[in-house]
Length: 273
Image 1: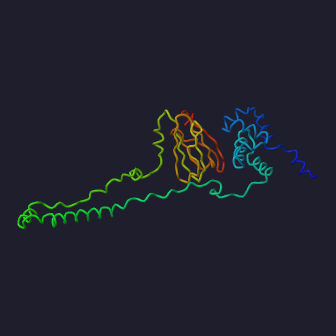
Image 2: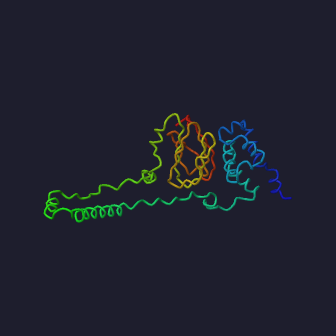
Image 3: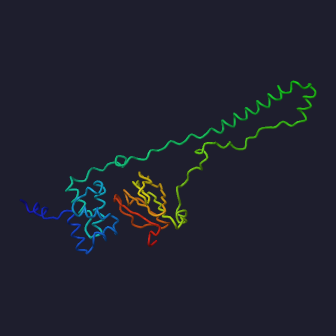
């Protein structure tokens, strides 16, 4: 057996390395969980080299990076070791294969107001003509002529298209979903989170009851705003590609490109602007 193989056999596993470094740093599992926002059962499972609770290789790599930074280890070295132990990193897959992109809803066809106004004008002109020609047949010609000359003829001047009874058509046109000033003015009795994608980012948001509010890909330069009375829990599939504002304050260093980050915020967050 070669010396290189003996060195690899003596090397601690990913979970063992994380647990040993945490003990050397005099940190408890609860302390690591609080600072990294990785739940206690997941931290304990990873330290036992059980990655089944992570939800897949992508999330497992993200948790390994987060825990490694917290206990002072090299994240990339541990991720490489994880890939070696689990068959290597797969080839990059287009985002559309990882997540089902949100279907683009076709725009509702707007009524053709020009055609409606032309039809209305034709109808009014026809009605006036019928009234003048047919309705005046019972009058004597001289009196009918005097009546027509004495009374001014009304002309139809359309001012604006009639309002549609369809509630969807009466909705105002959609503009930017939110602005920084609007988030800053959010009520103090709620927790408000605005996220703006600087890259394509997969996101998931749940309210304080755990109900799913949104899940899908947030396209580059698009924004989303979530509000709840108590707590918002988020999963960011590409934490380095999103800018986050919590209760009107920007959250710095949310994560790195490609990193999966799980965060939650309450009405008092962030503690420091």
